[in-house]
Image 1 (tube, one colour):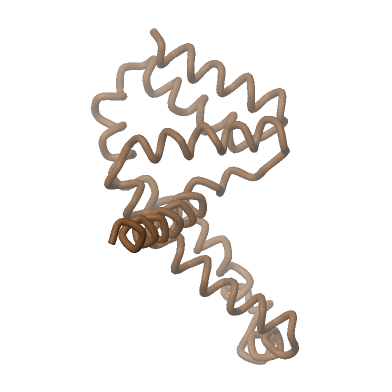
Image 2: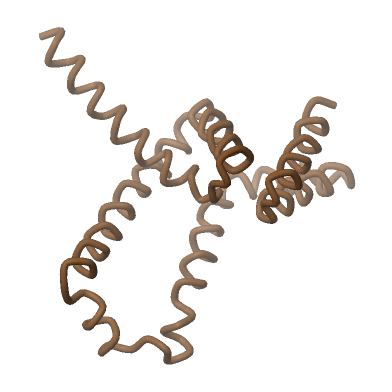
Length: 156
């Protein structure tokens, strides 16, 4: 019963925050659970959902290339100047950090729970965008790694 209440609460937070992604995601899970397909679908969704989501986001980002709106000329022009170079390097940095975040989320379910809570708060209260768990996990992995190094250096 707690799972149902939690998911209903997430739908309500999504409605209050006017966040369609949160509403759709929580409602989808609520429906799957209510019709009894959770035992069959949730394990696959949990195991492969991040990969599916990243693939879908990547496809959406590549649409301008597929439509011909962005070609090699536009790509090369986009990295001229300081704004383009900074954006290009930021893209590389975030992708590398996010890759470490995927590993951390798979290793420790508590990390995912804490990231989810932070993301829900950011979406509901601060009008954030729910892409945070993956990037957040990457940043957490980076900070945890630095923390471990500092502790190791201090403890000798």
